[in-house]
Image (cartoon, helix red, strand yellow):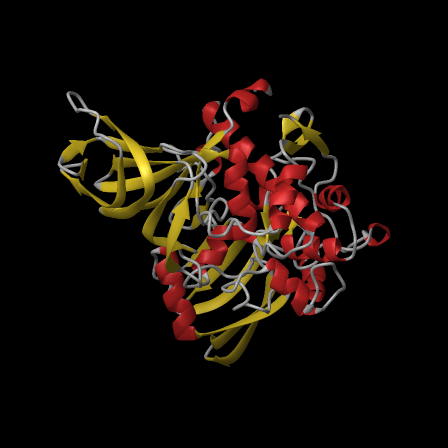
Length: 451
């Protein structure tokens, strides 16, 4: 895509929430446009508003249309507030918040619900994302690195959408009676560029966009992105790698990007690491506590990186999860939609270079079923999401060949591809500049200013 595009179209559309009823407040005068034959243009409005869905259309203030757009009369000072926005969807910290946003609000009727979409300048969006993903009190160099990867990832997603590439490779997916191999990315977002939750990037409104350090990080990296072979990088990130980062193809389609390779999260001269695709090596690695940037208990650094609900989970580098036979059988039946009987064993068949399992065989008393990739495994073995798929399994209290307890010993938090936020925060606290942080996690990449 021509780089001039971003100078001319510096905006992003963000799906915030969806519901049969949307309650919102316009904090200042907004003009209204309605898409429907014969609809009149209402006068500017402000204050508390409610829109509902009826017969597949948006109903607001006596108007029944396919969609409505509220545009602020003053782009910088006006804002709108949405009530009951769900954050952390399907994660253990899921909750509702009231959130306030700059830019315009579009209400779109879709599948008997209203989708609330925010159109906002890319750099204003990033102000909120950086403060929503981590604390605004983090070090400047870490925040600059975060701004560049968030901008890179965002622009890459918009490019994919505009080019008609939504990341789907259905020919690679497997769904049979005995095996399911699939993944989730952003291909379901066809009505807007990105969503506001962890599925894409946390975007929680202007109440999160606080702190002079965040503003400085955005200003000093304005228009800067990671590139590789003259293309903007798909710069993935997550909470904690567990000691080694992962390759893209372990989590998504079978594509290898040279800037998303496995990296040992240590100093450069310590980057030799064991082959964790070998089960015995993965076993030793995950059960040990090797040094890494992200292996920290420094509460000051963690308090900078993690928001309050993230700090509810402190065992991110090495963790343990226990299941009774009843619990794991119920989880697997719910997650797969299949009754496998009593669960007799969990056997890793394929691991990535970080030790993350992307193909797992589940042996039940009634049948055997194989699942993957990384996120599918995490969802099946948890009521929300297991911290990661880098784990080894202990079976205890075996009675008549049936384990009564399964214990998973795991490493890391998230998919492990790209930048490790905990590790990058530690690097920032140790004085590493933003470019060294970025090129540690995204090897073979470049940093360029494109607007």
